[in-house]
Each structure stands twice: as structure tokens, then as C-alpha cells.
Image (cartoon, rainbow, N blue to C red; front, side):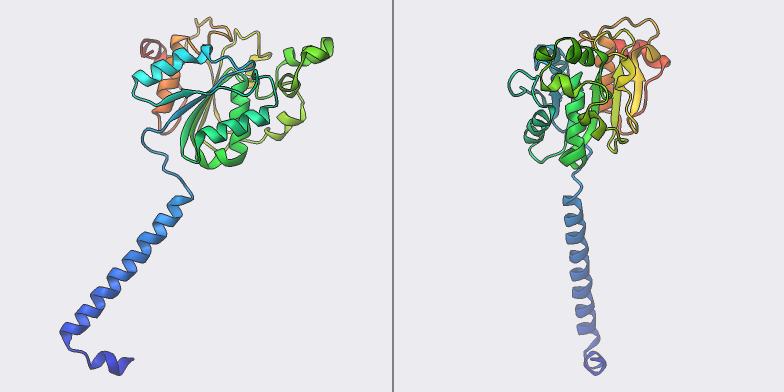
Length: 255
């Protein structure tokens, strides 16, 4: 090999070296592209999927979706299977189908946040760019527990799964590993206690932490101006940082 190289003219040596460098660079580029396929791009606008709460009503999230569209986002409110009171795992599979294997931002309202958490435990860990949950009973709600005791026949599968200590909630008690903002209101009388929305590994924010005078019920979360401002900020915040009291006025006005 050495004799062959020494027998080449200076011009041919230069050409062989140039070709070798180009081939090597191409291999590097291919390697980068293959590696990138395993980690979808997280920058730039992606679809926003909004997951309704228990009962599956899409009306509560329509106002928020409209505001996101005015901000230039492709926002889609999911239609949950049945009446939205069935198995939350089935709802997580629907979310996965809606994502279609591509990066997405997800907003989960109430039990929809539990659905998002289940999804992230699966393929969502690779696809979720950012997740925002609003008043989500990630550790259950005492109302579901009471319903299961007082009126078992009126507490369908999702109700049972949202009871504190359920097998499903035990499965998702680990810290979350994707950018996640969990927002709740201290005025919540549906998710009891309200800080059941607190999630290990997430940025956890009470509305009253941002605006101490905020009076927002569970049902008002998807339409409240402060919540809308927080959502818009979170979806555009690469670091998913927590808003503070200094941001109160601006966030309310940004809705």
C-alpha cells in the first residue's frame, strides 16, 4: 500500500485525499441523520393536541384551542372514545394515534392530564415536545373515591382509575422526563386536594402563586385569561420555566 501511494503523482495524491475526506464527511452526515431519527426535532411549531377531561366534553377546550390558532398554532381538540368515562389507557392510545408518530405539544385538562401522563410513559416520551396540564388529578381525587364507595354503579372505569391509590395512578407516580408544566387552582372543588396536580419532575404552578387574587374554579381553567396566558407562555418557552407574581398582569393581558 505504501509503495502504491509513493508511486502516485502529487496531483493524484491530492485527489485521493479529497475523495476520502468527502466520503468520511458523508458517513458522518448519515450517522447524524440516523441518530436524529430517534430523537424528533423539538424546536419550531408543532401541532398542539388538547385532551378533554372526564366525560369527554370538547366545549371546555374550544376557547383555548381558538386562541392557540390565532397565535398561529395548529390546535386540535381530541374526541375521546365513548363518553370519555371509559378506560384511560384507551384514551392514551387515541392520543398516540392523533400524534401520528410525530412531535407534538399536548395540553391535558383535568383527567386529560392523566391521559397525557399515561401516553408519556409509552411512545409519548419520544414524541412529546412539551406537555401542559390544567387541574389534573395526577394523584387522584377524593370525589372519585367517594363515588366508588357511595354509588359504585355510577362510578365507571375512569372514575375508579382516578380514585387515590388506584393501580393505574400507582403506575404513573414516577418523575416525568419530558418538559412538563402542571397548573392548578386552589379554588378547585372537583380535584380534591387541588395539589393532586403536582407531578415529580414537572414545573408545578398554582394560579394563586402567580396572581394571589385569582379566583378560578376547576371548570373555568380552560377559559380563564390567566391560564390562557400561562399556556401561551409555556408553549413558547424552551426552558419551561415557572411564571412568578411579577408576570401576573402581563399574562392576564396576553390572552
